[in-house]
Image (tube, rainbow, N blue to C red; front, side, top):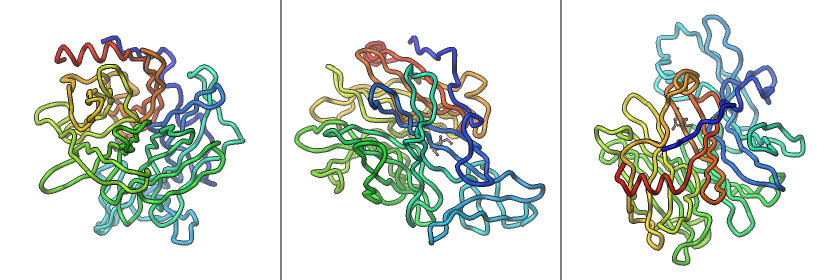
Length: 349
Ligand code: MAN
């Protein structure tokens, strides 16, 4: 498969953006949603910030119930502190995130060089279900309106929030559309069988696991008829968790879905599945091998290494321009061919 990383990868690094929050620094750029607007390509980046870390102290940001950004500081000597994962803090039995994530817009004329446009301010966490941040936004264009589905994190749990817009300047906040623990929500961009459809990823820590589910809705707000679509595969690159990328691509052979899978070492790769056109709860084919796995130095090392993760792409005929996060730190771009992926699925690769 000729998955092409482009020479200018990474296309964005944390140093390319000034911090939004006073006295913080941009630590990570992650996993953008992608859309077209007025002849430009837009990315809705997940940006993660935190204060510079003082010697012997851990500090991390969060939103207070009053909606103000605050910083908590804890001595690194505190015996109740578990810092084994650079993304998460466990302190005296409760979980927090080491950074606060929000969503920031950048635009490009050529799909490679992105810049900010002051007319489009960032989307910040709002309310009590987003107080630890908002992450990994998928974008679906449905009936002339863009629907943004993203992970909303707070002490209440990891949920899916939704906002929508017609101009990327003002947004309607639809609140939590899926309760905890759920993430990786991608909407289909057209109705199937008269219903809106979504892919989502609930987690069931005891019986079950981190599997991709399908749900339907009459109005994009109320979701039912949940069906488990794809589970993890023991002994494979996607043995520990799987989750959908962005809206599946309609092809003559079915819906092509790019998804991420991780193994028990938290190595994240991207793979493909083909879903039946009329009944997408039927998986027609699933690739054995990843489409993309961490290989380049910037994919293997960074804030959280060995990660390639995508939730946004542009499709133009046969060509998929995929934007992806590498090592939870950089934004990269790769080109894939719809037909090559379909052929590889047919050959059982
Ligand atoms: C989770 C999410 C992603 C992140 C991966 C790897 O799936 O938080 O945003 O890229 O973990 O850390």
